[in-house]
Length: 335
Image (cartoon, rainbow, N blue to C red):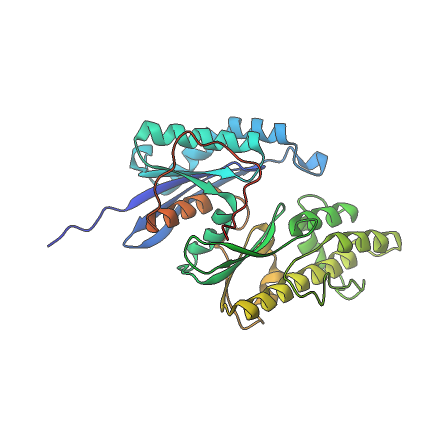
């Protein structure tokens, strides 16, 4: 009789922008389970209507010990139970990234366990591994405040960029329209809530890049149209509902066309905008097998980085060297 291998507990850290995230997952018998996910969302930026990089870095330094202790407590573990550490190395704000990256490297070195530098977008993609086993091939749509990217994943660990925004990221456009309408920050939840009281057909927004042969996205035109509608007297609720309808429409229609072109039947939709109920409802009507991250894993968090670390370990990737740095611009596509 052979002994079953001990479960591997992986701690993940994300400090790529304005959320301090620490998560812990357990890898056992080829299955991964989220044990803890603690996030400190920085409120200091609300008064500026956007993220202030230096303030973000300071907040990470002040909070990361507390967030890690909270994650260990939630998982019912001590730090010596951790068998591997993963931390985001990019893309993101370099000063913010360095806080989590150096913390993770120091922890791995102190525990004498492997360290894995994780790509932020791969973390978003593998956040969906909390809900379903992810096996290539599939499409992955990452929609957040800083990213709108559509990847084809033909094989595990291989990412082909098939479409991206030409201007604003989807979440950034939500933030800007929400601020324009006086709905507050962050804009995603504010737009979603206000849209429930508005008419989605009140403002006749056109679908961006409709008729294109490729799979890119654009939100700059919607933002300008929202400004004109606001000046013309559109209510905040009608503006929110109409903008949300148009944004969801372009995200879903473009992804469906890409799925048809690539022959993919499974689509991962992740990132902060993936929490939007209208987007989820629209994807549910496409006939595709669409996988979203579990509750609390859409926005930036440490559990998604731990999940990316688990995927790297399962794929047999080597641990990362401890002399690697943070990278503000780090494309995920490798083909």
